[in-house]
Length: 357
Image (cartoon, rainbow, N blue to C red; front, side, top):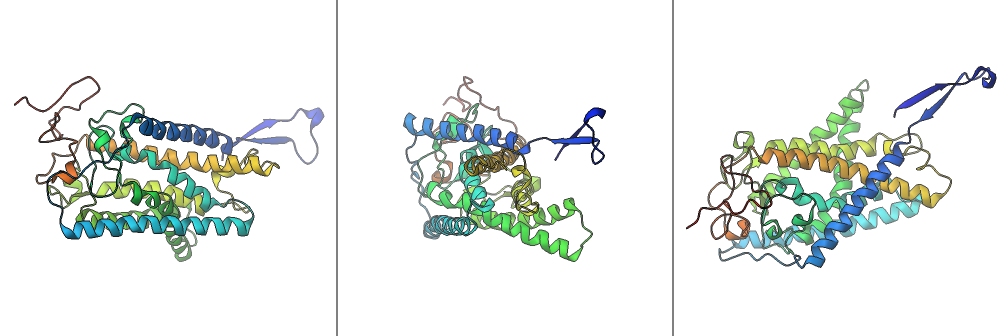
């Protein structure tokens, strides 16, 4: 936290203090950011629903293997179970403490950050393919300000699975990161804050790598524009860009750090300031919630920008994607080729990129 010192006029000085410290109210600025992000969230989802784009993307003609269907229902059920479990945990803990806890705020922040999911990979080029057998209503992607990637409304966002798989992991993964942060600090007590943070980030990145490779093998999603030289199973439909774990692990670890590095009052760095500690409990709670939300959305936005930019250098698409993964976003039967390093990036008004028959 930045500290600004100003001199006190000699006539007002006391023997105990010749300077007065004035601290920058971090909570205020993150709260403003959080309010702005929530406004965008409301706009994006409202525009999506009111436009009529919220319609299911169908799997297409290609057959879906039985094991993929079975796992899809397990995957979606886990999202609902995690959602219910995390809500119960946050409500009970908040009641016990007599205030909304940081974990509850993290849950809210990550749940509302779901609007950024398509921008994470597909903002510039379609670098994320979801399985359209999963329950979906297409995507709100085209309503994100400045969107570029074509046919984005057909991206089958797995809405049922993600209801719980956004908010809940925000809390659970932060707990995982905190466990390894404490473990690292216990083994090396002299370790500084950066070292502690890196312990958590490494653990979270490893967890993300294992989880994503597993889910990609079961064809819940795919990264077609991964940089092959930096990917596991590069050049196949099951490729996974290792740098995604590094970037997303760091993003997740930022939330873990928010939870770990707290003051003696249990406040994270973004909850410190006059507004967040107002005598008015309602005002204080709102400011703290908005500040945590602003922090989480900002870190996720930074990750989204970096990973979307990596897609510019990835590809080309591996062969063999079925209709329930391509979903008419590009390729045969569409006006757009599935992009690669030698293909132009479509922008609004640029027209089709597929060759004329």
